Amino acid sequence: MLNYFNIKMINIIDNKSVSKNEILKIMVSNMVENSDLISDKNIFYKEVLEREKVGTTGIGMGVAIPHARTEVVKDIVVSVALLKRPVNFDSLDGEKVKIVILVGAPKGESKKYLELLSSLAKIFRDKKIRESILESTTTECLIEAIAEIG
Image (cartoon, rainbow, N blue to C red):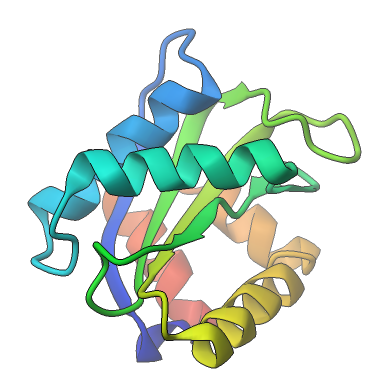
């Protein structure tokens, strides 16, 4: 499922006491640096933050799936980050987040966008998948763990 989409950044972020917004800013910057699918970094970041205001994207179990549909994204793009230190995403279960999957999509991609978000939520409910990702100690291990998802 994930291989179908443009995964532009798989990274371990060595965050030292940074907030949810700072993590999102780092991830947006990484997406822009590694893709030509986002035409305006600042607008995309602002749209992601606006979506966070609507309701938490922390789905629980240490996972967050922040996302936004916006005119400045040309095609669906995904970034995955493993945080060395958990960050508060106001998750429904109160657990801090260590796995962040940032999704950007063009305004007109509602069906694929919603299917992807639904699939990601199902995938990351699987304890084995989460543990495989959380056990990654290098970016290479993290890439392998993500690749095994399919």
